[in-house]
Length: 315
Image 1 (spheres, rainbow, N blue to C red):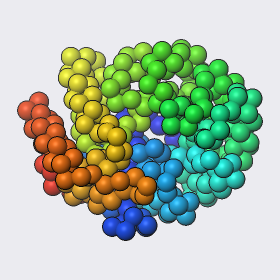
Image 2 (image 1 turned 180 degrees about the vertical axis):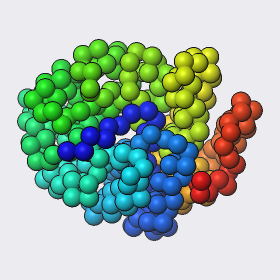
Image 3 (image 1 turned 120 degrees about the vertical axis):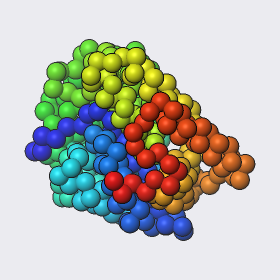
Image 4 (image 1 turned 120 degrees about the horizontal axis):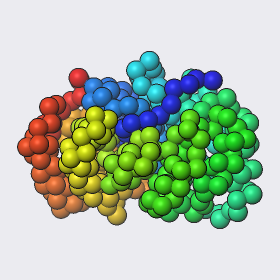
């Protein structure tokens, strides 16, 4: 079993699509990986909520997993989210991730039906018995209806030593703090809220799986570097910008703002998968204004990289 673990700043990748929305834009997916590696992120999290997992065809998800894993091989750990409503699909995607030698899988509980803890334990245990890969449980109850409690994580991680961590996107910091306090030292606690990264690090967390960092990774990387060197004033400055980025991207029309910013940066097209919708002209103008203000703020506080809107990510 591979021992690469997630930590630090881990962008939650978008899934670049062709203009029709029916196929993966393979070249753009490779460019996105190269862009993020050049920006010095610490790992990649593919096909999660930001990756439109719930609305993509299973075979397209497989191709995206293959492209990202191949492009990042030997440079960054790659974890593939394999959650799906049907257990058979989860097992199929988990086996595929193992076959392409991903560095781990992540999975949400089954969604639509509410389930008690006994049912969730059985589900996660069946997946754990099916693969010999590091597994990260993914707690995002507002999207999937079911909660991965800290008690359940500890019980499963004790029974299966390749259940190595959890991404907590509950937006409940008390729950995240409980996870950090109760987990074993070698377990990974990742925050899924771009406004709480510094707080998560301060209480002993290992990093963040960040939607904002897939499109504007620079301040997230700088936040992590400032915390690592013990400069909390600088870290707070970057956290403030990361929180602004989160507000810019959290809209009633999900994913489209992230892809539009990446389009402006020359990385991929802006198409989202149906039934998600594209932005209106007015929404696009508002986003462009917010984006340009944030990029100007990065330049003002001394970001050393190329932060122009046509940054192609060629390193």
